[in-house]
Image (spheres, rainbow, N blue to C red):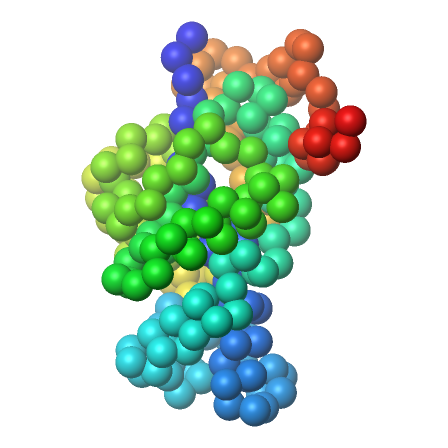
Length: 214
């Protein structure tokens, strides 16, 4: 049976970029995080940021404060991805974190460190912006423009619910339990079955930590 490939975005899907960037903006302005609304659009205009202001704070957060290594993981992502991986789903991380032309070494190393420290399973990782070229069976994505571009190219996309993408209709998950359920059904339909745990695998998202401690 051929592999069922799941293309998984990072920021806003696996990693809580919103809370990390919100902390960075509050720190830069010397204000409390509660002063920055949680109901934001894709470009954070509600926080009074223009493109230049966003890129400046984002750059400093990534370079000086290692944002990509410190972001909180979204609830349930590790356990759900391990269960899907154990069932035979090929996890392909797809991220556009190299969109800015600076300090790519830090971004790549901090991304890999974050994946390992948060026990995120993956078979391969792609740093690119043109996500329709990745060739996955299904994608999990939060960015409105990526969701639309992927669907226009004929791809199945699960919109991971965020305030800035709620105007987009179609397949949607509000948390990782819902992603897991949708992907399980899609794989069963595409491949003729879904085995929740392949024989011989050590269950549990903390298996890497246990193995390293031996």
